[in-house]
Length: 153
Image (tube, rainbow, N blue to C red; front, top):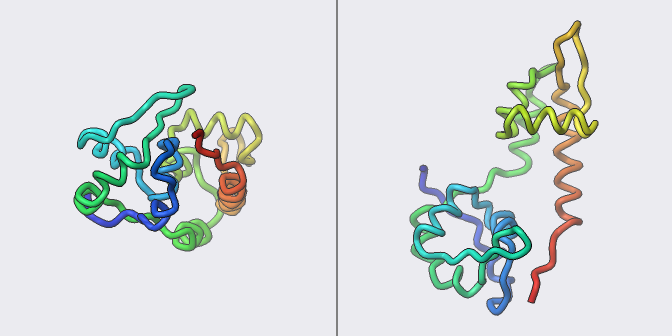
C-alpha cells in the first residue's frame, strides 16, 4: 500500500463522546476498507449497532496519529475523477465501467436494472455512455451530501 495522508481535518469536528458509523469515518477521512482493516488490526474497537459498524470517536483520536502517518491514503480529488470521465470517448462496456467504479459486474447489473444508469444496446451488446456515468456520479455525490446519517448519542 502506498503511504500517503488521510484528510483528517473533518475529524476535528467530531464529538469525542459520540460513536459514529464506520462509513461516516471513511467518508470524512477518505479511508478505504483496507485502511479500516488496518485500524481494526491496530486496536480500534468497532461496535455493531443495527447491522452497521460504529466507532467511538475518542478511540479513534487516541490511535489516530501513529496509524494515520503509517497507513494513510490520499483522497482522490473530485475534479480529477470528473476529468478522467470526460476524457473518455463514447461508450464503455460493463467491464470498463465496473473497473472504473471499482464495483462488481453484479452491482453494475443491479444499477442498470433499477434504471439508475442508462444503457444503450448496439445489437445485443450493452454499452454505457461515459457522459451518463458522469451524470450518475454527480447525482450520487449530491444525494450522499444530503443523506448523511446523524450519529446516535
